[in-house]
Length: 127
Image 1: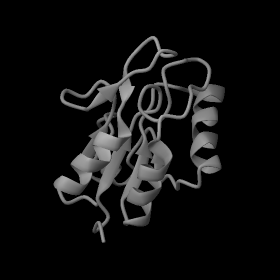
Image 2: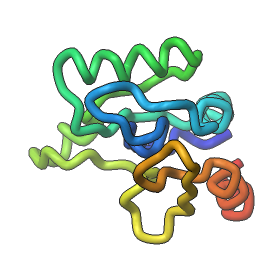
Image 3: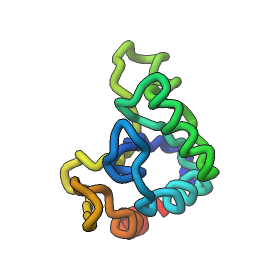
């Protein structure tokens, strides 16, 4: 069990290809995120999307049966800080230094390579 560790997950370029403000294409994030949730991790959607666009991202998680613990906040951190920055033990974001990226002929920007991310999660003992 993950002992309630928290993972903040970006959306555009991380869960789907970059097509903001539209929903991007599938890049293989859903099975890995479900596996993390099933292992006991609390997932936070950590996105710049807001309003209707944020709800579309939340709906993507629902359609893919991935439970979110929170969206754009860590409810527990309000007990010890007023900072708006989302606190998590792990961040998965296409802009993170060292995150494995890939691309294809249809994408204009690189996006997260979830096959390699899963390999890293296994190697580091998260899965």
